[in-house]
Length: 375
Image (cartoon, rainbow, N blue to C red; front, side, top):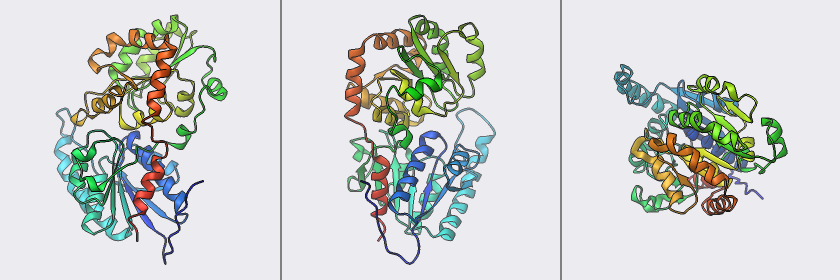
């Protein structure tokens, strides 16, 4: 039974949740907001994100109001847009200060992403209680800086005192969407949704909303191997690679191959999956662990401090998952995946190990940590 927090006040509690940029930040933020609403019925929640980013569409769809800051990060390639970054930051710092001053929150939660830094910084300066959430096993630069001002820090991995003051750390795990947590394995509805065969093994492959070039290249090379060995494939390409994937697989239209730009029903995709191939962003790892799905992680080499490799290795070291380096995936995916798909005992072993590190009630735990800061 959920514990509801009753806080007698003259006015409703106000909370700001700041951050976003990708689904890996946005979906956990929404999960935290919903957990707060369950615990304090009349709480007022405002999201602050970055204009033009993923959160500006998904947060309103979830029923919450959001304000967008004109902020962005540095591009890894040479572009004039990098010249605008300092000006956008200055503008966002001023706007965040005005939002915090005008909205008068009782609590601010930073979930990472571009908008998190200016809002958390503004809140800390006005002595507003602050919680930051670090999703990865290797802390980002922004959160390291903000940790000095934060009151409490929610983390998903052991050993984070390397980066943050030990007395501020709470091991909560990363929030996972309720619809994912409640997914039933081998759900009949899921097989009907994808029009797949319940008696075949299913491989689920995805690499983020934009897509992952090397993972898509490896699928183009090995998809026939899977299909010819009676394995069904659900393939999320990302919007940059969808047309290319459709063109490359025209001759396979009679096989059980389902290609999507973006999978709206990830709960159903996880349900049918016997094996998952994915990047090792914090939330993908948390979802896969919560559902105890055997997985091959392919860390992106294009992220700060190589944190995806560290996320994956945290599981590999516990013998809970397999990892293939990005530079090797095009060559090795076929053999490694088929070896696991052919070995039921090995997949069962990985699933059991996954279960030992899952945090299924992370959103509720973070909500409780945050609410504990309000007198």
